[in-house]
Amino acid sequence: MIMRASNRPSQRPASTPGRPPTFRVKPRILVVDDEPDALELIGFNLRSAGFDISTAEDGGQALKLARDLQPDLILLDVMLPEVDGLEVCKILRRDTATSGIPIIMLTAKAAEMDRVLGLELGADDYVTKPFSPRELVLRVKNMLKRGLLPDEKVDQIKVGILNIDIPRHLATVNNRPVDLTATEFKLLTLLAQRRGRVQSRDQLLQDVWEYDSIIDTRTVDTHMRRLREKLGEAAKYLDTVRGVGYRFLEVE
Image (tube, rainbow, N blue to C red):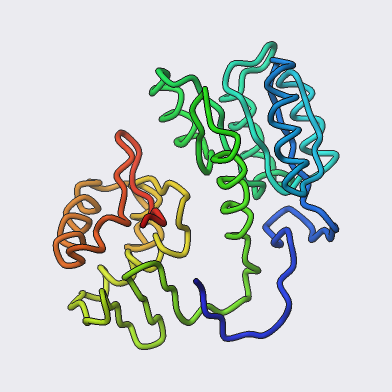
């Protein structure tokens, strides 16, 4: 649950750099997969959940549709003909017209390297095949919920037993205050605001420590270890993505 200071109605998708605001009755999802059965399965479940669906069967078509349609989210398979999904993700993130579109990668269960590379190239999340259609729909919904307007003020973030009061610089677990340093609080808040999205160590160094040049990323690991120790039971929300960085998970 998120408590907002503003009562303005939310708009979707969020305005992002290089991407003009658009207004749709239904969010549009671009599904990219070269397997007709997968396109049919994903399309059916997403339409049933209330989304408009566009599809592409190869990387070149995916790039064209992403630029032309400006979808609210892209489901992108890694194994594609012509231009593979990793290269498509890389190109989309470099293009100011598409850099703000959320991307969920679809990867083979055993292809850990593909998942790591996808996250490093800018994917927001990944789902492994074979996947549960219900889980996929939930991932899409959760990703779209995070599209807050840039100027929307969030005063509190409450996830399960953890509450973060941003104006008061106060974090509580089961209503008990947690003694955090300013850096630890900023790190926790940033991860919670971007929950579900993997943050690389280099990105955290830039956004939390505001370092312009790459330094020893063990700085992040050390602070994460201390933060987890202080959060105790609430440390379950902080997930390590091996080889990449960290993310905040909404778990029971």
